[in-house]
Every structure is written in structure tokens, then in C-alpha cells.
Picture (cartoon, rainbow, N blue to C red):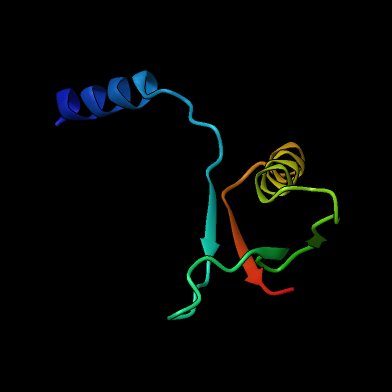
Length: 83
């Protein structure tokens, strides 16, 4: 049994440290699959609004950068579609 505990401990020490995961969830409606998104909210936290001059990709990157720099655990992001 001691050998098994040592092997498990050794494996845990060898495991790489992973960065927190950010999960992006985008709700789509049938017949409206290409709808742009303008609002983004962090599950149980702050919300962001897309600037008029900002592309969807730039908006997503801005929010992801802010979330990753301020959080140390996994995050759920929820896109809210609409104009």
C-alpha cells in the first residue's frame, strides 16, 4: 500500500499546472444562428457592453483579457444576443 501512495504522490507532483479555463456559452435561436452579440455577462458577476466601433472578435478578446487578469479560477461566460 505504501508503494501505491508514493506512486500517486509522484504522479500528482508531475502533473503540469494548468491555467484557469474560460468557458464561453453563446445562446442561439433556431432561424437566427448568425445573430451578433452585444452583451456579455460573467456568471454571477459583472457584465460588458460591446462598443459601437468594436468587432465581435475584439469585444470577445477584450472581455476574455479582463476576466483572465482578474480571476484565478474557472469562469463561465454567457453571451446574450441582441441589438
